[in-house]
Length: 155
Image (cartoon, rainbow, N blue to C red; front, side, top):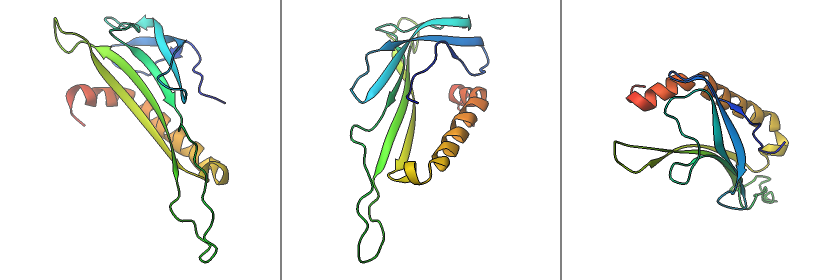
């Protein structure tokens, strides 16, 4: 299944937000190897949070490699693979926010980069599934702790 968030997206539990949801609409991505969605409406209680605009973007974008790489030929003498290429995927969430009173908005960004060596996707797809399940589950489970660390600098 392709990257296609179901709207509204239910936000993770974070202090200061009550039952947050994010209505998204398809947006024009920055490149042909991407899909992008803009947050057009908010649900729950999110006092002070703005939806997407030109000056304060609120987007979620997924990129795939512009050229998907495959395994090279096996060395006929050694029977091993050399220099296994990696396919890199990214999910980036952008949010404009004011750094101080009477200032222009600055861009905040969260980037998750997913690197999968060529061949793993077909030889051991269950390992990729487990990796992503654990990563996304941990981010979701620890969303409030991660938010606190980003806001206070205390890990």
